[in-house]
Image (tube, rainbow, N blue to C red; front, side, top):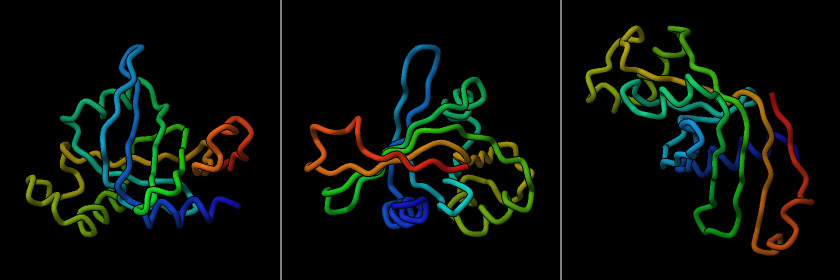
Amino acid sequence: MDFKDCVKFANENKACYLATVEGDQPRVRCMGMWYADESGFWFQGQTVKAFYKQLQNNPKVEIYFQAKDMNKVMRVSGKAKIITDEKIRARCIEERPFVKNMGITTPDNPLLAVFQVYTGEAYFWTMADSMKEASLPRIKFG
C-alpha cells in the first residue's frame, strides 16, 4: 500500500473523527473532510470553533476514517496548517456551498477556517489486525 490508497480511502469515507489537543486534554469531533489528494487531507470549519484555537496552539492531530461497512479503518497522525491562500479559500466556498448559509461568501471572511493535514503517517487496520496494531506498516506522507 502507498499514500494513493490513503487518499482513495479518505475520499470514499469523508465522514471522520478529528482529534486535537487543548492543553493536555484530547478533543475529538466528527468532521466532514473536504477532500484528500497527494498533498494531504483538507478540511473546512469556522474560526469560532474551539478546534481552530487548538490547531493554532498545537498543530498535531489524529484523524480516524472508517469504511462505510465498518470493516476497515485508516488512522492518520500528523500536523495541520491553516490555509490563508485566497484561491484555495475561494475554491472551498465554491465546492462547499453550505458555508454560504453561514454567511461566508468571500475568501477573506475571517469566519472561514481552511486547514490541511500536510505531513504525517497513516495506517490501515481491520479486525484481523486487532492484536498486531504496533506492527502494521505506516505510510508516511508530506
